[in-house]
Length: 383
Image 1 (cartoon, rainbow, N blue to C red):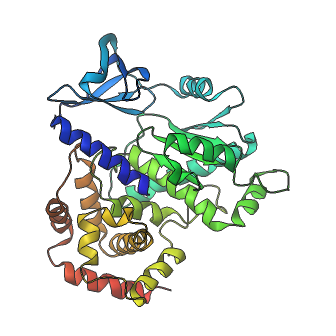
Image 2: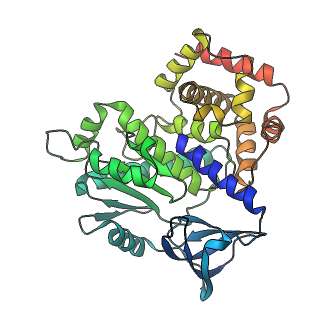
Image 3: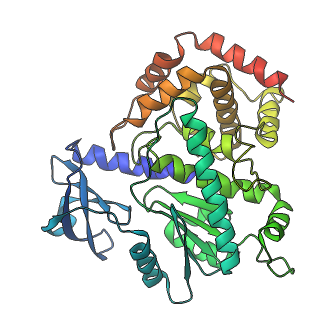
């Protein structure tokens, strides 16, 4: 997901300007007013996560949104004289409706607040789908020794009625490069943004089985939705830290590992970790066409650059899936060790390529050549 890299890089640039020092999250609720670079006024109640030596701030609002504020932008900062508390589901639903307009309805589930201009039945289907994925994701990693946590904030999904509405919102919210996607997860806002994948179908929407049939007509579309939903769960369950320097091969590999949908099950996600035929095919083409260079594994581990290059991105995603699939299946304990180490990474601190490689070797061993050989053999055996 290219926008993740862009967001992280821009925030790391903020760190370089401000020489940030980690101070730890404050339990107190504060009210901040500031004007951004476009002179737009903001007023947000939240808690400070990081304060730079020069006064720059990383703020998280009660809705889970992250804000970066340079000291010259700050207008006022006041103690609200009460502890910080995330907005409960009902209050967050009202806030979203006020932001997006009266034509938006809300659907609330155990972990999600879905704000939608689409048909309510479709939003309810999405809620059930996300809850199944959430439960399966947590159970999958619990069984493998990864300690995850319940989200601090309700998980927000915006579901637009049409692709046109989605594209208009996405262009303003995340940039024109995501307007043609089927959905995305924003690390900054902590929201998943989607649209009704059945909106162009002439058949009236029915029950869950009818929606399953309609979305299954184009499997890649629903896989993209699951991919983004997995990102949101991973970033809110303690697996990844928002605005930390999470290697993109790991973040994207995790989402691709779960992205094969299981629409037949009402309670689980039997396809978690199934062979991803599209990613496997791309990786094999990467190999057979001679595009994969001898240092491919090392460049994937040490830098996110390949994900941001138009000609290299598809191959980088495929290799990230292949590596993740191999490690999860063949080196489970080491992979969980690696996940636990990365989950505690501080926000807004950039790692050098050497530091990234050292972290990987600490979990999986020094012999990258042997690991690569074993991974390639495993990929050739898959069917």
